[in-house]
Length: 398
Image (cartoon, rainbow, N blue to C red; front, side):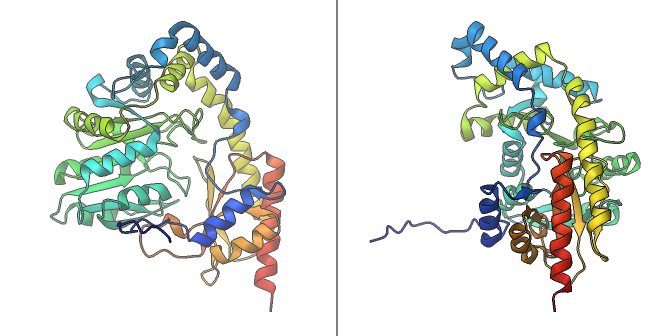
């Protein structure tokens, strides 16, 4: 007899179960070229340097590295993160900075601290899928703010923050996922001014802030007056490696103090060994130089994907030209559904991520995300050619 647990099953995946099944199955098939998942390039991981850092920590500081650590994070690493942020124009005091287990935990802690059921959350549409999921656990009233290559719907932002209710906004100003766009300086200045005038808060997701193809971008937190209105979330996952699971939050001291308490309740601390190994790596290597070596490779992969899309996509298909990040956002004709295309595409040897899950509300089905970051140029071109052929065969079928 099956055991019946007395809980309500109220958590559901953003992607439909069939899509999840197809993507997991495709990941086990070597003949399928995957353009799904915003994964950093595995060939770009500094494996030897990280191995050296890990060995040094275990040899010189093994007892400390294998012991518990304070919830705030490893002191030297916090100082290094603060210095990195100062180089990008963000002034950070030690009581404003918390090390987290990746940016995902940062979003989870902020959602738990700042949201209650029915609270207003302004959220970009489309946006990062796991952000929709983690904020959704708190049952806020999500207000979609249209975002794309042309920027953020600032009229919708103005209407939201002027509406009389205290507002929290989740935005990715310098590196929007999935469109691969960044906001203009003028838009950033207006966002800060609106939040100061109307007592609103912004959670800034800067995961892709340093993956920029057309010049460096400042975090929103670096703009004058943003210190009390913008909470910055960052991570080493996109610029170094996601395997260490190290991110951070920069917030006003009173907010950070509450987050430290929540962090201790959630998982006590981010793993000590990973923090110390990362700190050792940063002692010996300049992260900016590593990013500068990676950017030409990512730019090449982006350019190959864009050229292949131009060569192989049928009429009526549109796509973004990302200036940052790891992905291209594709729009099919309205009558076509990306989730219905996925099974056909996998049968032809290419996988992608259907786009409906990226919308917090009223999700259209004619979008998909193609990630170029973790494939070499040759496989990217072949994958897009396969996708184009699949799409043409599908649309031409009687």
